[in-house]
Length: 424
Image (cartoon, rainbow, N blue to C red; front, side, top):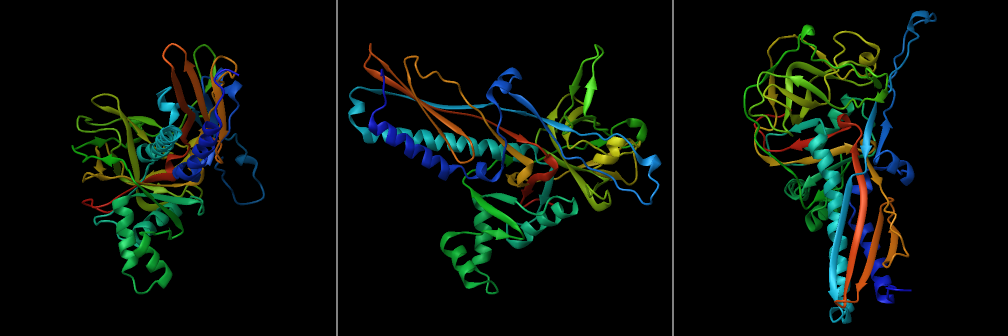
C-alpha cells in the first residue's frame, strides 16, 4: 500500500496514545457525552442537552389546583475545537527514528494541553459560583468555603473537583507540611511531593497554567424593580412569527445597567440585596448571589450568567428554576465587583456540570495518505496521517483531535480568587 506506516511509526503512535491517557488531567474528571457523527454533521455540530427538572411538592391530599405543565430547559453543546499538529520530515531526517518519535511526543503534549486548557477556560470564564479570600491560599478553610457554598445551593455532594494554580496548590501543600495535627503520611507527602489530595470532600489538582483575571473598575447600578423587567423567566422553546419553534438556551441574560464603560467579560459581581437560594427548597441562603459578565454588548447593556431568576412576577418556569430572591428592590441597586485585585483564576466544579464531547474526522484511508486512529479512555479520537511527496522526498505528518467542551450548568461550577480586598 502507498505510504504504509513503518513498524517504528506504529509503535510510536501507540506510545502517543498512552501519553494522552497520562496527560489528559482535567478532561478525565469531567462528564463525557458521545455523539453520532452523522447527526452532528446535519445539525452543524450542535446538540441540545436537556437539564434536570426541578419539581415542586405540595401538602395535602387534594392536589386539584396543583397540576401544571413543567418546563425543561436545555443547553446548546457544540463540537467546535479542531486541534492539529502538522510537521514535515525529509528523507534524510527519516533515517533517525528517534527524532520522529520526539516530534510525535511534542505533538501529543501540545494537543493534550489544548484539551486541558479548553476545559479550564470553559470553567474559568463561565462558572458563576465565586469565592474570594483576602489571604493567599492556606488550606482547609479555602476549600471548605467552596464546599459550604455548593452545599447551600443543593449541589450534588460527590464528584467535586478543584483545579488550582501551582502558586495556590503549593501554598496549600505548605500548610499541610507544617501541620502537627495531621497523619504523618499526609504531612510527609505534602512535604516531599507538594501533594494535597482530598480536602473537605473535594479532590484537588495542580495546574501548570491558569487564567488571569484583571481588576474590575467603575461604579455600576442596576434596577431590581418589578417594572424594570430585569428578571428572567426560563423558556424551553420560543415561537417565531413564522410559527417556527426552536429551543432556547437559559444560561445567559442581557441586562441593562447604568454604565458598562469599565466592565469587561469575566468580571464577577454581586447585586445589592439579591440573595442566592437553595435550588431545590428555594430557601434563601442569606448569601449574595454571584454573577459573571459574559459579554459587554453596549454602553448600557451586558450579558450575564446566570440569569436573574427571582420569580418576582410568578410563573411556572420561574418557580421551578428560581435561583435568587430580592430583599429591598431599588432602581439603583449597586453592583459590587469581586475581582478587586488581579489574580490567578482557580476553578472548581461538580463533575456533571462540564461535558466533553468527542468528535470524529471521517478521513478516507484510500486517498493517497495513510491513516491511523486511536481512542483514549475518555472517548477522544486521535488521528495520525502521513503523506509522501515524491517531488521533494519529504513526508508530511499530522496528528488531529476534534472535540467540544460545554458548561452545562454554570451554577454548579465556579472560581476561587485569593488575595482580594474582601472575602465572600
